[in-house]
Length: 602
Image (cartoon, rainbow, N blue to C red):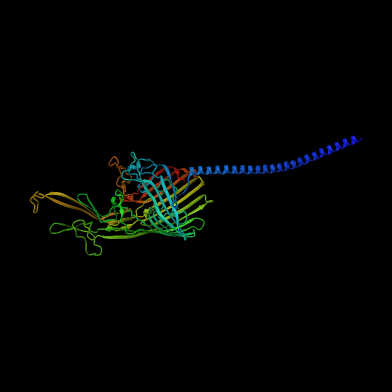
């Protein structure tokens, strides 16, 4: 029993030792389990953090890809489109313009490009009226550049605009079609925050209507393809120094000093024609251009030796509906008169010399011209002041789908401010100036059917009053040899030169004389050469020119890459002359069609 008890004690001790060892291993396992659990939590946390970082990285990468793609697309777009304005040393430079392919058909030829000279529409007696013409041109293609910047509180800008509607002495249609580049506008401007602006250079005259206020580059030009626009439109592009004060965009006042040029018409002026065919007049107003002075020596109308510039005034009102203008023009004309240049026989003195006489000298009524040949004795300058006034209204109707406008201008000596270029003045028998009264008007309707389609219709007219006179002096001198053998004082040759004067002081003349010869205005004359179509004797001074026009423009594309558009214009023009001898009143009619295809620079 003792041995069994001792054996059991030993087993109990072994069991205890085994249990202690198991407890020790269990404790170790518990510690390891706890450590493993902690490690797993850390791993899970790390994994979660890593997953979050990966998600954020993916989102960032996606955003980066989007940003990079956007930047690449913008860069590609900028590379394709480029900036609208170029920045250069603090100046914004904006180029523009268009390239045009145009055609013109006239039922009665003018021998002209797409620019219509309304006064030259041929009467039926002109051979050109018997043929039509069809011309093709890219010469109206235009380039522009606007440069602007800020100098203190002032906005300073400059503008340049040019096309190819100029003809040099070598320009021709035979092979090269090399027409010269010409300036349309070139001016500089300083505009202040107070609304005051000062502009100088070549620009549209102040008499040209604006769309709003009195702003350069906001002229309300007809939508015509014809670069001479439409009869009745008031315009000129000439030198001007303009000062404008704008009052809050509702009202503006402007004054300008502009470069003038006199245009004259009529016929029958006092003349002396020598035996050699040379003529002498008793006045001059224009002089031929000097090529060395950079004037056009080939312009047959010459250049006016101006005494003073034209002065123009304008008030513009923008009350919120429509645009309204009132303006005036003051022009000064000057010519030089030679009272002793036109003389006629009055008597023969004792020596057998023919004594010629002319009108009384200015400032000395009792003294006449006693010279025996045309002379500059007593020459003097004569000045006349003319001008006119005009008004216009431009209003949007039918939810701004239609623009309706009217304008009327009238005055003495302002014919050149109309598209038809009627005469400013003519001359009396004594050489003094007689201003021609003219009036012109234009009505317009412009229908904006869609943002890409416009239809326009215009009707305009220009009218000139008579300025006719009688009493013009003429002296036609001829010489002949007469056999005087045996007569006292006869030369040894036996032949004596006899001078004969055929004189008159009752001739008719001026502008639109009721005695003018219009009989051949409707009778075709044979040509005087292979390049000289015939034109019979026809005074044909213009009474009224009228034009009705209908056309449209279709914008095929208008966007950041420029614009593509095409258009067609039809015009019906009539030119009516004043009646002359026999109450003959000439009339000319022309039908004209233009087409245009243009690409506008963006």
